[in-house]
Structure formats: structure tokens, C-alpha cells
Image (cartoon, helix red, strand yellow):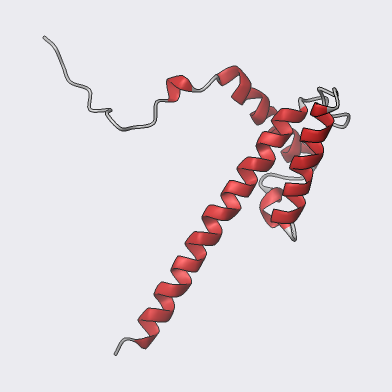
Length: 110
């Protein structure tokens, strides 16, 4: 008996090289131990600071330095974390703006 699997249009996680993603999770774990879980969400001026950190990690990698001195983990994994953080801030900033607009519109309705 053949059975259908309705996964058309869904993200294909089999495309993700999990060993590489593991390096990113190691960086997140290092950050959790060094600071605390999800501390990156509370950093002031986060978008500018994480963009700057992203550029520093890319520049270090481009200069031939594979691993971050502090963590011993790949600069590119650190850079990925910075990008993930920036994406998270963009997404959540947009959601907050949408929520604020909806609340404002609701306050004007009779």
C-alpha cells in the first residue's frame, strides 16, 4: 500500500549540514555558559554591536584565523550566530511594530 506524505512546500531540513549547524550551537552554548541563556536578547544597541561583531569575525577568518581565541570555536560559527541574532531582532522588531499598529488602530475604533 502506498501512502502519501503531504510535505510539499515545507522546509527540507535534510538540506542542512548538521555538523556545521552543531558548531553554531556550540557557540550559543559557550555564550550561555559565559553570560547566561538568551543574554544576547538583552544587549543594548544590539543590532549595531552584533553587526560589528559579525564583521570582526569575518575579518579574522578572512585574515586566516580560523578559530576565536576566547572560545576556541570557528569564527564563521560566531559570525553565523551574529547573523541569527540580527535576523531575530529584525523579525521581532517587525512583529512589535505590527502589534503596536494593531493596538493603535484598535484604540481609534468606536
